[in-house]
Image (cartoon, rainbow, N blue to C red; front, side, top):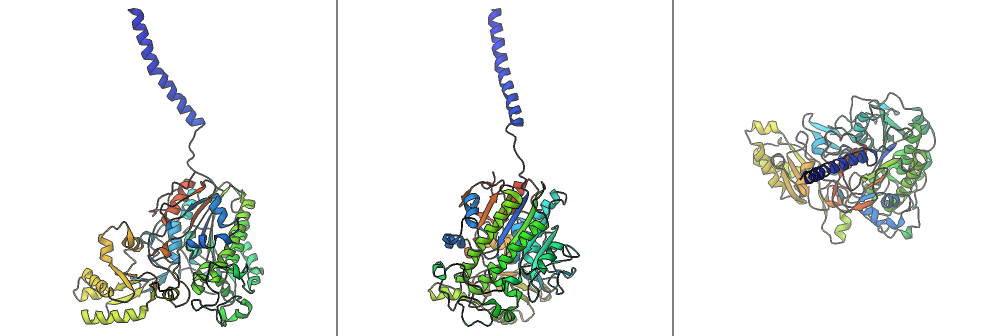
Length: 558
C-alpha cells in the first residue's frame, strides 16, 4: 500500500514537473534563438513619387523596360497591383501629403493644390507661405513652407524618433512635391526654379543659405546641358503601345507646327520659358536624378547606422502628360527614360549605401484620364465642361430663387462655397440652401452626382464615391456642395490629359516596396495610399504620423 502511494506521488510529480521544465526551456530558447525583431534599420529609406503615373503604364510599356528599374522593383520587391487613392480630388498637393502623412485631406487638410480659404476670402496655395523668403533665387518662388498641412509625416516621425539625428532631404521639380513630403522637420526641401535661372532653390523655412554642394551643382553646366533636341530613345516605330505621333489630341510647344518628334528644345527655348521648358520633357526627370545623387553624396545619406530619408518626386511625367496626353509617344518615351533613371538610382544606392542596406517605396500622386476628345471620337462617352458657364447659370438660378446674386462665393475643385453670412441674413437654413443648389446642379450637363456638406457631416460612408468624397472633405476647408462629373468629363483643354476625379483612371496607381525588411511577392488585394506611411513606420519601428488613418500592409513586411 505504501509502495502504491509512493508510485502515485511520483507520477503526479512528473506530470506537474516535466511541463514546467519544458516551458522554462522554451522561454530560454525564445530569448536566445527565436527573438522577435521589433524594427528594421535600413541605413536609408528612399520614397519615390511619380507624378501622374497610371498603373497601366507599368503593363503597357513593360516590354520596353530594362531589368534594372521597374522590373527590378517588381521582381525583387513587393508589388501592390490594386492600389488606389481613397479620396478626391486627386491632385499633386493632396497626393504627396497623403502618401507621407498616412491619411487623407479630411485629416491632413491639403484639399487641393489651391483652394478657396473661407476665412481669408481668397484662394491659397497648398505650400505657399509669405512669412518666409526665397533662398537661391531673387524671385518669390521660395516663399514656401508646410504650414498648411495639419499633421506630421513619416519623415517627421523618423526625425523625432532619432532625436533629429536621422536626416531628411526632399527633392522635386515642383515646390509642393518637395515641401509636403519633407514635412515640418526636414533638413531641406529643394525644387527647381526655371525661367532664365535653372537652379535648385529652397526657403528660409529650412535654411538661410544653400549648402556648398547645392551651389556647386547650380554653378555647373549639368542642367544647361539638357537644352538639346528631344527625340525618342528607341526607334519610334517600336512604340506600338501609344497612338500616332501627329494628332489633334496633343498640345504643342510655342513655335511648333506639329506634335511630332523631334522637339527641338534649343529652337523652342526662349518662347517656352527657357529652363522651365525642361520640366515638360523627360530631361526634367534626368535633372531630378542627377540632383538626388548629388544630395546622396553632399548630405552623406545612409553612411551611418541612423536611418536617413530621401524623398524624390519625379514631376516631368505630369507635365508631359498634361501637354501630350496618356496615349502619346511623348509619354511612352518619358517612361522608358524614367526606367533608366530608376536603374541608375538603384545601382548608385547599391554602391554608396550597400545592397540590402536601404529600403525603397515607389508610388504616384494620382493617375490620369484619357483625352476626352479622343474617347469621343472612339464613340466612348466623354466630354468637357466650362466652369465659368456653369457658375453664370448657377448665379442666375440663385438670384431667381433667393433674390440675391451674393450667395455663391466660389466654385473651384468641383466644390461650391456659399456665403453663410448672406444665408443667415436672409433667415435661410444652410442645409436647405445646400440641398436646393445640389438638386439644381444635377440638371447641368456633365454633372453625374452631387452631395452636400451636411451629408458629409451626418453620415459615415464606407464604400463607393461617397466614401471617396468624404475622405477628401475637410470640415473647416471644403465647400458646401460637392460635384461629381460624369466619367471622362473634365474642365480642361481639348488637348492633353488631366486628373482629379473619383474614378479609377485617377485613383489606380502603382505601389512597390523594395529592399531591407521587404518580402518578395505581390498582392491583388486592395491597398490604399494612406497605408504606405504606416507600413514604413511599422518596418522602422517608429510612431505612425499623428493623423494616420491607414494600416500597415502586412503582406509586405518580413
